[in-house]
Amino acid sequence: MSRSVSPPLPLDIIEIIADDIAEDDDTDSLKSCSLVSSAFRDIFRKHLLSTIHLDLSRGRPKEPPQCRSKEYPCVADYVRTLTFTTHERHTSRKRGGGSILRHFHRVQSFIFVYKLSSGNQTWETMPVYLKSSLTSFIRGNAIMELHLYGIRDIPAVFFLQLPHLKYLELYDITVSDFVPSEQHSLFHPLRLKSFRSHFSRTSPLLDSQIFDLEGLEEITMAFDDMSNDTFDDMSVGKRFMQASDMLKTITFQGLHPKLDSRGNIADALTSDSLRTLKNLNYYPMLSGVSNDPYHNLTHELERMSGQNVLETILLEIDVETDCRCTIDHVRWSQLDRVLAQQNGFPFLRRVPIKITLAQFMMDYTELKERLLEIGDQCFPSLKQNKVVEFSFEVEIDEI
Image (cartoon, rainbow, N blue to C red):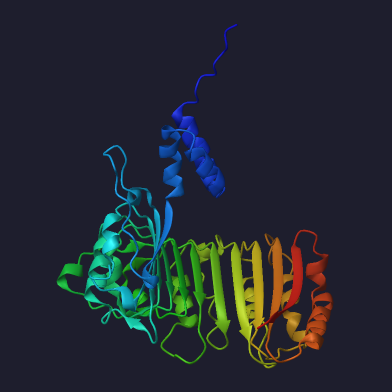
């Protein structure tokens, strides 16, 4: 009796299956499939090795394994997303520095984290060998997404080395003023789609006109407290919004007065952005009972009423450690009153509100009960609206 043998699946079908598994972040299945055969190994290995983290903060890592035959490329050739963490103690040529970066030529997303024992690292004082390796790596890869952490006074011209850049995130970064020279006179502005800044100084990027922000779709900005007046505040966020005609999502976080929406949102949005903006995420931090719980956001929403396509307004309100916040029902009711205006927000579908009380020594039991009463009583229109998903949560975060 002869056995029928099923024909093998074409490799292009296996490629599609591998892509679907990778999209689900199912690492175990990717590993299992890579063991089926050499053909499967080549297909699934590119997904298993597409994202890696090199951490030099603990010492020099091993070099990427090289091929044992010309049939297989170096592991580095599979990497598309690279996180590179280094420490000031491990940046010399002898300790490896950034030399390991020379192996990578196909990276599209790069995360660079610089750690110090104390203080802040400046671009000027960064070890020359590390700076050279970093610059060579950036020029040698078509990087579309860049995340930088913990460097001060990066020259604005540094970003001109990234002609493919679409997504930029800066965390605890300051950018120095742009000093043009003859070699920079003919540069083409970089077209960003997403810009995220956390506790940074980024206004020189606007002044330099290095970026073409007309097609910017997402802005995220988190502001520090008032301890550093040179860092960004809402006025810088306003300038970023004014530069775009295609905003879809805006996110702001911080303490008052650095996060103060009055005059900084409705006036900043172009008529085109008002027709594209769907998501507004707002993270005010409250430090006392005098604070408006919305940092004047309701004032701006009222001005946008009837001329917006907002679908989600997300509010996550943090009460600073062992501080109080207002329990005035009138102040909390502002949001419900504004959003209840007839035809004011016709596309609105979600309004989640979450309040987090950071507790160290203070007993927040009573305050939590009062805030839950506010959630029950101060949002009647939102609670009755059948097309809007409304929620109000209060939680205590013990520190």
